[in-house]
Image 1 (cartoon, protein in one colour):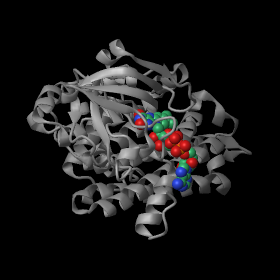
Image 2 (cartoon, protein in one colour):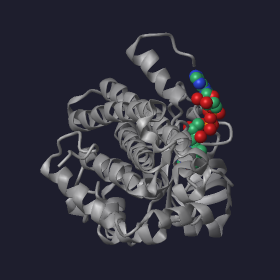
Image 3 (tube, protein in one colour):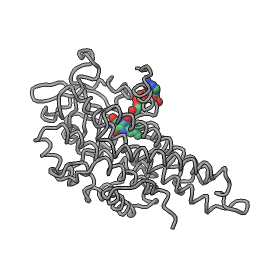
Image 4 (cartoon, protein in one colour):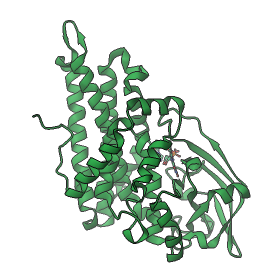
Length: 400
Ligand SMILES: Cc1cc2nc3c(=O)[nH]c(=O)nc-3n(C[C@H](O)[C@H](O)[C@H](O)COP(=O)(O)OP(=O)(O)OC[C@H]3O[C@@H](n4cnc5c(N)ncnc54)[C@H](O)[C@@H]3O)c2cc1C
């Protein structure tokens, strides 16, 4: 029997178990399900509920708080499989925050907050799906953020705007990044930023407005503009140390970036699979179009690039604990860069292979291409990933 072309790295027993379980769970959500979520721009609630019911939203929460206690090595398998199931980038994006936003709480929150919140998140009863960093004037340059959290007694009073914040309507809480000290008053722009847990129901009652941003890619998962007008949050909802929030974000960035690379990889794999199937089935001029090298080579190139990205992702996820922060940053940025490029290349080759049907909704490859284009922009743009490599690894001068 030919070796499955996706089985190119050896998995540990735990990784193999994750892969089997996730494949099995995802088989209940077919291409038509994801096509419909995209067409109608509807959040895949049934899919998220199934993952939550089986405890997957608590996969990174330690067992003592009711979670599964897994790590990045298993998270990359999970997210690759979810995307490769046909869900594309939208499917992992629907739950990514629900899994990752508990990580800074595990690492930095005080014991009271952890024991109050984490068991409920692990049980799927409450969700922390939303993370609010980006602002209209602070995207790649996130330390330019202007949203203020002023201390008044035992409350923070929050004013400002956030943009592109995903899954807000599917979440009970938002992990908010806000300035507790204005930029002019701190010696380094990375200081004075804090991480605060916002209970969204209370915040709506208190003056938080949200507005959905119409968009063309990953349509099933919505992003919002947020307007805070004197929204009050108890100071006990501070996560970690006041003013040190930016460093707390940096601390989890590499793990998260590797997992997003795995999501790009799964998207590229499902796109390539569609391209291969069509290239074998479709006959033009009396033979399968896949026999033409103009069709075959772009698919083979995409395979080679996906395989390279996969090796980097799995190897880095495996060695992450042994790397210092700069080394881990280099691996994570290489992985994200390669995986997003490979996903785009695979989706583009799959569209071309499909001829006119490349833009027909029923073949899904146009959806994969829109999502693959998005992966070159989020969560960090390809240029910013290259900046890291240019400046931190190659020792070139900084552009900012
Ligand atoms: C669908 C979607 C979901 C998102 N979800 C979230 C979320 O849940 N939470 C959240 O906080 N944010 C979220 N974001 C925001 C995302 O992280 C930002 O869009 C991204 O970081 C880029 O910021 P920007 O859009 O402001 O681009 P800008 O910073 O304005 O950059 C514009 C362009 O200039 C380039 N550029 C800027 N500076 C440099 C430089 N020094 N060198 C080279 N190139 C440069 C950039 O690479 C980019 O191509 C989301 C965005 C999208 C599209």
